[in-house]
Length: 219
Image (cartoon, rainbow, N blue to C red):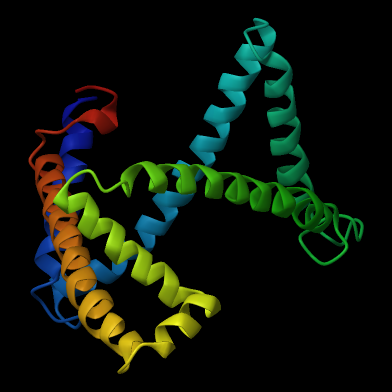
């Protein structure tokens, strides 16, 4: 029963939602879709709660066993509770609670989380630049084409490069936008999206048919 029930629920939910796309909303099957979609949000909320509980459990065990880097685990736990507890307490208790302006949550978000996020993305920019340097070295014809295209696009996106491109005869910026961004780039993006959609459809079919059972903790 522990194996059969989750597979049966996954099959029925997936089958009904797929079938509902072919029916109007005023039909029985179409109405079931409108009933199921809020449950997706509800289940998503529980998965988020499960993720928070998992983070707390894993880090607490690491601290209790004094594993490598356990002081950083303490900071992680403090951060989780410092952001979570004031944000769920009612503001009627104190102006420091809730998520309004001037609350503990607001202060931590604006003066700790936001600067740390900015620092993280700024650090990632250096890694991206390093990876781009290694990828754009013209060792093969394909890498040379990538180098030329990337150089033109980067010049097009910055004011100095735009001024340089405007010196060239004709509307070179419009050519870049039409043939590279809306042409080759769009074609590649659509190919990636189609591939990802086929992969998602294949995985969904495997879950509906009970072939894929990793959501039950088993392969």
